[in-house]
Length: 133
Image (cartoon, rainbow, N blue to C red; front, top):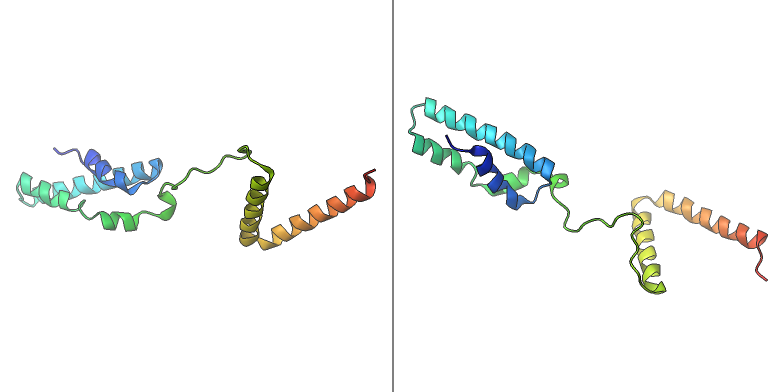
């Protein structure tokens, strides 16, 4: 009897799915292929032809790619861990902060506005209560 699990896993690997999604999809496809293979055999089809017909269902990778959700696909770049700072000059940090602020402003403008107002108020209070000499 063919090992449908390994065959499905080999075909899914190029899709670049996350490990849990790949495992779930591999198990589901292997079960489907096993059922289809047994159905063909019980219908009187020869083993070799049943194997070829069942294997032909895996050939259409486009259908598999279209069926996989976008959230299951592995990201192209690893996310930067929180608190990770790379050494650089002051301007690099400034531009990085500016880009981050722009992304935050785009995602939730109301929060960015409130945070900015809070920073301005804090700066004014600091200047008022701790004047520089």
